[in-house]
Length: 344
Image (cartoon, rainbow, N blue to C red; front, side):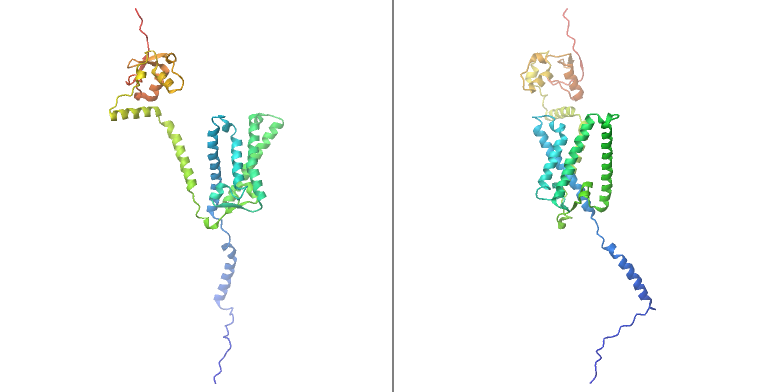
C-alpha cells in the first residue's frame, strides 16, 4: 500500500535577501503610525451651526413674548415695558429657562428645535448655568445702568472712579474671554460660552438619527420676515403717502367718470369757517363748535374759498397737484393771503 505523507507543507524561511520583505516592513511601520490619525474623531460643522442658531431662536422667542406684553400694558402704564426693559427680559428668560431646562428636559426651546441637549454633570450644573447667565446678566446690567445714570464715569477721583474703571476692565476681560472661547468653539465645537466651559456642559445631539434632518423652516421664516421688515422701514419714508392716496383717488374718479366727492355739510359751511378744521373736528368724538373752526390767518384758494394758512398750506405741501378743495372739489394750485374788502 502506498503511504500518504501527512506532514504539513513547509513554508520557505524568510530570506533577508529578498527586496519585497524589506519594502513590506517599512510600509507596515508607516501604516501603523497613521492608524490613530485615521480613527481621530471628526467634529461636524453642522453641529456648530445648530448650536449658534439655538441662541438666535431663544432670543427671537423672548422678543415674541415681549411684544404682546407691551401691547397689554400700553393702556394701563404707557412706556412701562421700555422703562423696565431689563427686568421684563430677565423675567421672560427666567420663565422660559424654568419651563424648559429646569423642569423636565435638559435643553431650552431653541436647543430642542435644533435637536440639542446638555450632557455632562448633574442637574445642579444646569441650575448654576441659569443663575449665572440670566441672574448674572441682570445684576451686571443693573449695576452698569446705576453707575452710568449717577455719573460715576465722570468722577475724577475717589472710590467711584476706581469702581468704574474696575468694572470697565472686567467688561473688557469678559469680551476677550468670549472671543477666545468663540475661536476655540469654531475649532472644536464643544462649548459655546465661557460659563458652559467652566461647568463642563456640552451640547450634543438628542437623537443621532435626526442630526441631519432638523427643519430650518422656523429660522428661515424669521430671517425672511426680518429682511422684509427692514425693507419696508427703509422704503416707507421714501413714499409720500398723502400724495399717493390723493393721486389714486383722482385716478379712480377719472376711470369711473365720477365727480369729485364733496360733503354737502362742508359745502354749506359759512365762508369764515375753515372746511379742513371742520372735517377734523367731525372725525373726533366731541361736538363740533363752528366758532372754534373759524379761519385763523386766512388764505384763499383759486376757487375763492377761505382756509386757515396752516391747514391749506400743509395739504398743498403734502398732496401737491392732487390737492382738492373740500368745499367744491376744485384743484388747489396756489393760495394767497385773504384781504377783506373795505367798504367805502
